[in-house]
Image 1 (cartoon, rainbow, N blue to C red):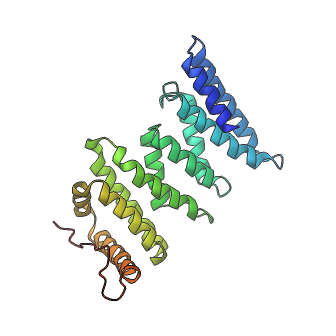
Image 2 (image 1 turned 120 degrees about the vertical axis):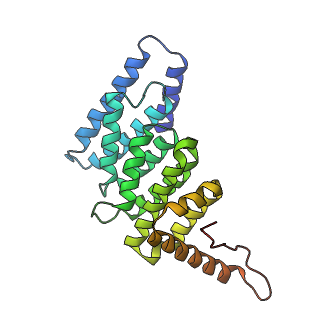
Length: 240
């Protein structure tokens, strides 16, 4: 049904009428009413309805981005609803996916970045959110190159700090996953990455080095076979 909804919105936007804008905004408001009713959990289908409505709202907004600017009250309300759902165990995974889609479409980036960073570095004390935090970490590293140049370095520092704070809470089990995210950031813009490293605290720079060394050690054990050399080598010189 979501592909059908997307095609319908595309056809609607392609043939704009004077009432198109108001019709689409009212559609979002109606979806939000359905969402609030579903959140009452009055039937067995309520949870599925809530998840599907989150997805439908996301499809609606991203398919007609020129209509749904983030200054619109209905859009802001959905952004708030989505962030609340991110912190609920039953809807967190779907909400994380919706946030990724909206953020990559540059919908309400400031709000989503702020909430995503907080969710990663200081998550709610609710079990069952690990998969969502992994997806949010992937989203932040994927979105960073899309940030305008003047704001990319401060954002990179904040993303690195959030990733490292997550490791401080989760321990060595997160080293490999976090190393992957860090290397993605380094590959995208190595010059900014090195500058961002210097902006981190001493404790975070030390932790980052341990994470990358653990990744390098794991790679050596996988890639070294007899006389062959490791295929990946990491230079641990963060000062230059």
